[in-house]
Image (tube, rainbow, N blue to C red; front, side, top):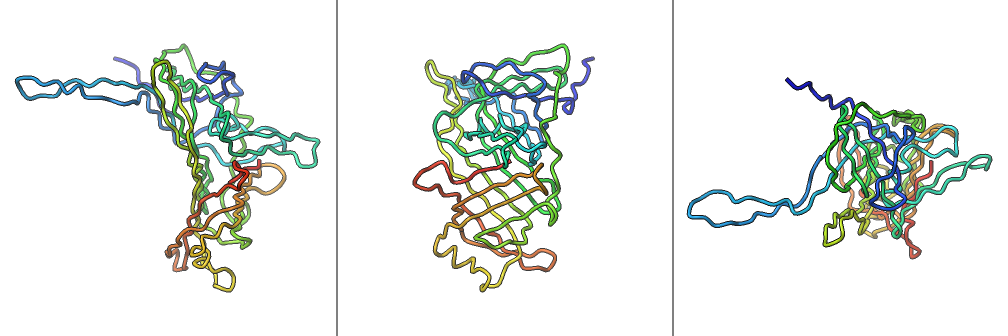
Length: 314
């Protein structure tokens, strides 16, 4: 009888590739502290041969493309000490973002992530589940951010990469999660959100990077590409008086206003999402605990310079 394989006995390591599509060598410091993992060991396009026979019955299919997907969550948190690179840096770089690090002793040590269009990097991912290794080369992806009141804020990543055969390995890899801070709960103490200069009593917040990730498998080409980006999101908060802000009027005029989400308490373990031009969509109403709430969708609009529709400062 075969011994069971335990799904929660898992380690995920990721590293930026020097050459896209060529596996990078990982070490313990490349470990990613994850939750909510979904592994699709093989995916691809299947084509029915459509064979006709003198009797009913299915014809065989052929898997004409093969690739692998991996999705997981990471705590939406900052760093300590300030100016060190967060453990999820490689993940954001493979989601079409640049990472500009300003270390101490600068007066404002931080890492700034900005969207990019050209020169998108890729990562190698090593996912080991109870001594069974699933590798992905040339992986690129997209991400979301969720921050709901009385909850734990999270990054939600999804990556697509090249298929590689599964391997049995002798043991689990060494891991070091020192680059990951414990995420703080979303509440009045830790979290502030402003929309068009108004500090709103927010109950639920989401941001979707919106990368368009495609798997190209052509003659002499087998890559994962990011071919577009449309970043969107929504927030639900206590509705205000019209005198404070007329949200419906902003939607009618398709106004693009600043949005800032800051999560953390001090110089360390603080993270800020800044959307300079959040175009307000059509609001909707709801009720929570008998209190009138408004949900406002938004789109992140770049300036004429481009690649500036959002930034994340850690």
